Image (cartoon, rainbow, N blue to C red; front, side, top):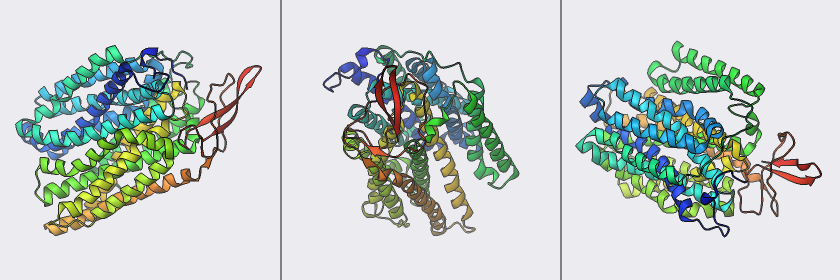
Length: 524
C-alpha cells in the first residue's frame, strides 16, 4: 500500500527507521498518551473537584461523561474528516484545541464551565485519535514495520493510563487543577514538534463531495447513544425516557444506513463491514475495552471503599499491568508477524478471562501478592496482546483514503463499548445493592458485576474464534488499486499469507490486463 505522504517520513529501504520517522511516531504517541492520561487522572481527582466547587454527585458524573460524550459521539466524523481534509491538518488543529481546553479546564471556577471544557477535550480527541492512527497506517507500510509502529503506539495508551493513575494521586494532594493543567504543556510541545515532523498529506481529491446528511445523522446517533447509555443507570433502564432514547437511536441509525447506501461519498462505506475480520475487530474492541473499564471501576471501588486504600495506593496496585504492557511494547509487533492477529487476540482474551475470574476470589483482607497481583499480571499480558492486534487487524488491507474512516470506526467501537458495558456492570451491581451495607454485603454486591465483566471478556474470545480457522496460503499477494469500479467480496474467508502479515488482512488479489489492474478476488 503506497502513501502520498512526503518522503522524509518514509521508512528506509532496509527497514530501519530514520530520526524523522521516529519523531513522527513520538508525536503521534504523545497525543495517544495524553488521551489516556487525561481520562485516568480526572477520575481520581473527582472528590477534590466536588469539594472545591461544591458540585453534586450527578454533576461530578458529567465531568467524566462530558468527555466521553464528545469523544464517542464525534469519532466517526473525526475519522472521515481526516481522510477528506488532510490527516496532518486535522491532527494538529485538534491537538491545539486539546491544549487550549486543558488550560481552560484548570482555570475555571464553575461546574458547567468545567464540564464544557471536558466536552471540548473529548471532541478534540475524537479528531486526534483517528487522524493519528491513520497517519501511522499510511506512513508505515503494511507488515512488520506497521505492526511494530502500532504496537508502540497502542502501548502509549496503556502507559498513559497507568501513569495517569499514579500522577493524579500525587498531583491531587497539591491541587486538582494540576491534573487538568498537566496535559496543556505536553500537548503544546507535541504540537510544535508535529508542525516540523509530521509528513504532509494530500486531501482526498476524488471523494464525490461531502456527505453532510450522513455526518449529521452519524454524529447525532452516536451522541444520543452515548448520552442514553451514560444516563440509563440514573434514569433506569426500563424508564420511558431511556426506552424512547434507544428507540430514537435505532431510528437515526436506520436512516443513517439508508443515507450511506445511497451517498456517492459516504461517511462510512458500509461495504467495509462485509469483511469478517473487520467485524471481529470492531466487536472485539467493544468487548475488550468494555470489560476492562468495568473491571477497573469495580476494582477501584473495592480497593478504596472496602480496603480503605488511598488513591495512590490503588494506582500502584494497577501499575504492574501497565508496566507489563510498556515492557512488551517493542516485542508485540514481531509476535504478530509470526502468529497473526487472530491467535494473539484469542490468547489475550483467554488471559483476560482468567484474570477477571481469579479476581472473584477477593475478600476483605486480601494478600496482594497472591490474590490481586496474579489478576493484574494476566490482565496486563492480555492488554499487551489484544489492543495492538485489534488495531493491526482493523487497518490491514484498507486503502489509504479510507484509513481515517476505519480508524474512527474502531475508536468509536472502543468508546461505545466502554460506555455501554460500564453501564451494564453498574446496573448489575446496583441490582444487588444491600439494604444493610456492611463491608461483606457490599463486596458480595460487587461479585455479579465482576461476573458480568468476565462474561464480556468470554464473549470477546468467542467472537475471535472464527478467525482461527484461517487457511495458511503460501506466498504473498499483490495489493493494488483497481482502475475499475470497486467490487465487494460476497463470501470472504480468513487466510494467512507468508508475507509476515496476520491472517485477518483484507487484500485484493490482482492480475495485469491490457486495460490496467483488475480485481479478481478478495480475501478476509
